[in-house]
Amino acid sequence: MKDDYSSGKSYGGGSDSNCSDWYASHDHKPPGPKTLHVTGKCKFPTGGYSVELKPAEPQGINPKIYILDKIVNTPTKPVPDVITTVEVRYDEKTETEYDQVHIRPDDVTLDVEHTH
Image 1: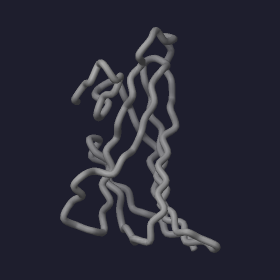
Image 2 (image 1 turned 30 degrees about the vertical axis):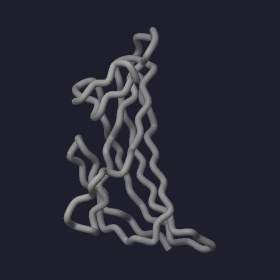
Image 3 (image 1 turned 180 degrees about the vertical axis):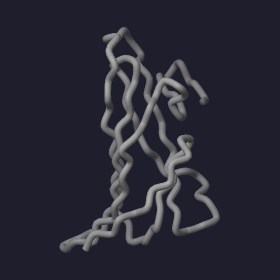
Image 4 (image 1 turned 90 degrees about the vertical axis):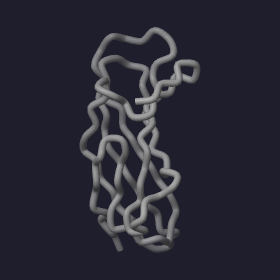
């Protein structure tokens, strides 16, 4: 995990985050545009966290697998000392037909459900 204490960002989440319930779908329903959705939940030992998913740069060698980097925004001020679950959501308008989404650094690979 790479920490940047001045920005409150941590790339990954380390042992403090416990993410689950990942789901990926590509919505093809009219009127469009086609949209890729990725959702999940992350638990943290305190409040004040948020989570982003961003496209990895560069992408991998398989164009059918979309790689996303999980970025955990850590608390920058005092927060409640209570276990907190944070909803994670990524949406992207794309015509590209992905078979899978891979989330780093968690090493989670999801099959993409295509909805028509």
